Image 1 (tube, rainbow, N blue to C red):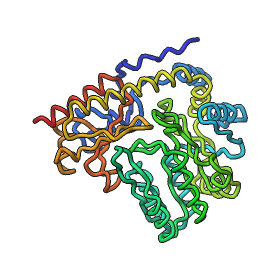
Image 2 (image 1 turned 180 degrees about the vertical axis):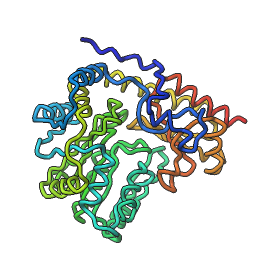
Image 3 (image 1 turned 90 degrees about the vertical axis):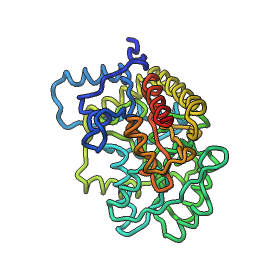
Image 4 (image 1 turned 135 degrees about the horizontal axis):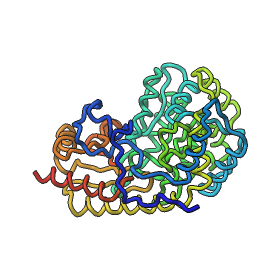
Length: 393
């Protein structure tokens, strides 16, 4: 049986499918006719092997409580070993209904109300939300944009914030969303050594680990044993195989005490088994999805290069930040002279696009826009053309 879903130029009509990306513009305050490239899911059909596995499971007709056994872990273990040279152990694994849920559980498990949690703005906005919504304080070691058109870590500020704010928990985003950095071994070791020195627990969100276009993804917990002892590593097939609505993630916690504290919060939240379809999809993806994954990755890489060239040649005053990982392009509009408010109006009402505004990633994101290029090339070209036309008016 061959992989069938390899036509990434194919336009899939996602409207009226309960699709967050396409069906909720008006409810979220947008014009109904915007072209959406905001939320991080792909407009590609997933692997046909996943489709077939889900159909076969649905035919059983019984959807009672479900759990997995060791073969599931072995499938996940093999993917992590083959793609990231990371040898995980079954006793480390905790499954959760999504990574954001896991972040919230970590906040509850490892901090007390009023404690400070460290993040690196501009960063995926649910980081701040799960901290603040649980009565904790957000502290940022804000990244800075270097002359090399990449973001960098201010390590002196990182250590200073940890010491002054008595940080117990740090959310690491690797690869980083939205700035597209794939952190190097040297950078991760500098962070890790500081965290070990101060006894800081690290929640490493590595959901984009399979989207690396420059450099190499390095699993933070695998660099040193002492990093593993302070780490909660969050992974999922949801970004890689476009399975976000399946609500399942694989969380690895090598430290027994940290795992027990995490599990206690899951129990307190009333979470036990996950939905069976998410488990089936994960197994099928990691077992049979390699051909689809490699083809998709190549297509997305070409989309990124297309975007880079288009921005350089056609969008005066706009700069695309160098992208090493993820399929989320971070565009700098500050050279256009538009205020953050003017930029919002231009994107939404002139270009008729629904992107993720930079300001939702933190104050330092003002003047930027995040655009999802994991879609057919014609859609990327249409979106960029709309920006070009809007800027020329």
